[in-house]
Image (cartoon, rainbow over all chains, first blue to last red; front, side, top):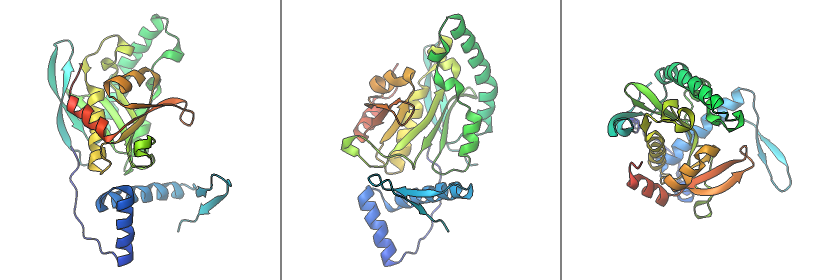
Length: 71
Length: 211
């Protein structure tokens, strides 16, 4: 049932690979799953920003909001 | 659009036999056309039946108000919102949209882990006893929930799924699906939130079809 997938080679620096492996361990996901999830979130944020929405982080305790500026 | 199709089985209630159905990993114009024509006609008949039975509108299935055409438009090419449907006899028997990105597990045993959230799932009106009094095909909801579990496994989420249930479906998720009831959620129209662990998903899939 799962859609056919295409394979690609990805070149990462040591730091990028370390960050990816850290996320994999933390989230109990493999590298493909982390990158697919990152792509979904990137697309979600990009679509909302294109529509004029803003992305914020909010500190629950202090209620401080900081806007994430998307380039 | 590439659509992947797999085989599943529904119970034809009138004939009391299993019939072949197809699970599509997409919702296309064909399903939306069925919703606009076949589903709309049967839903209208169901609403007349509910009104004739004196059932107040507030107790009618809330999903009758769902607009699958708008949901399809909003989900087009959106990676985190895959759609699924069940087809049988070339007619759409059920529709479902998932959310792969915006929800995390709430159960303490799996808190914060990724899961597949079932955003919307609905059976065709002729498969709903609460609407038309009888059921043509049984098993549509189970097939779609298994598709959500399969998606969760494929994404490395272990089969974990979560959803907010409409009131008329709460008992089904609790008893037939074996999901954990995490109480009413004031953040989501006070709907009851249910979650399935990897172990519960294994048990649900192993159980297979059940009336």
